[in-house]
Amino acid sequence: MRLNIRMLIYILSTSLITFSLGNGYISFSYRTKAIIDARSITDAYAAKYANLIKAALDRDFGISRGMAHSMLAIENSKTANKEAIQIEIMKDLLNANPSYIAAFLQWDLSDCKTGYTKTHRRRFIFTVKTG
Image (tube, rainbow, N blue to C red; front, side, top):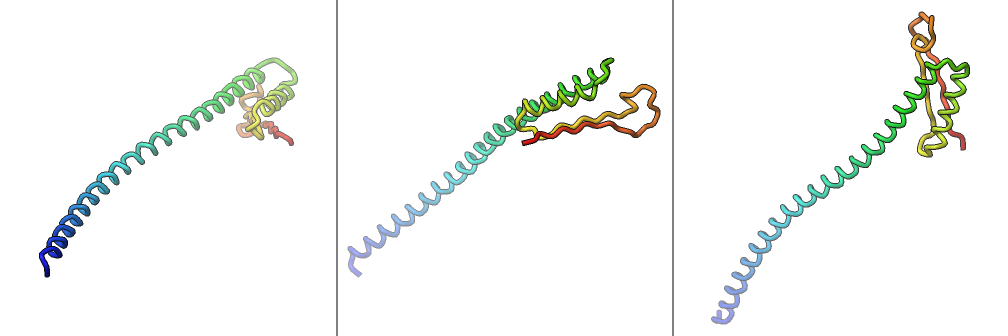
């Protein structure tokens, strides 16, 4: 073989090995960095959407707590038409919150009727949004 061809083969093989090692190192380094970046982005999105879900649930639980307190105040009052008032409040709740499709209220009669001695009897009101 001629000297030119041998030199060309040695130079090309050395260059190819050096290029392959450098490319492998860079690929491995960026792969590790890409995995770390992907995990941090995933954690950020998870935290963002967890906060959004928490805010929505806190809002709904706040509405539920407010409804519970108002229904209890009505139940403890001396008003004669308690059930009609409670139904109207529940209808207003459904109209004010488009994401709600129904509301349910349940009372244990031993808690809300004086003189009721049995243990398991309930009164409930169920309202559903129509249309």
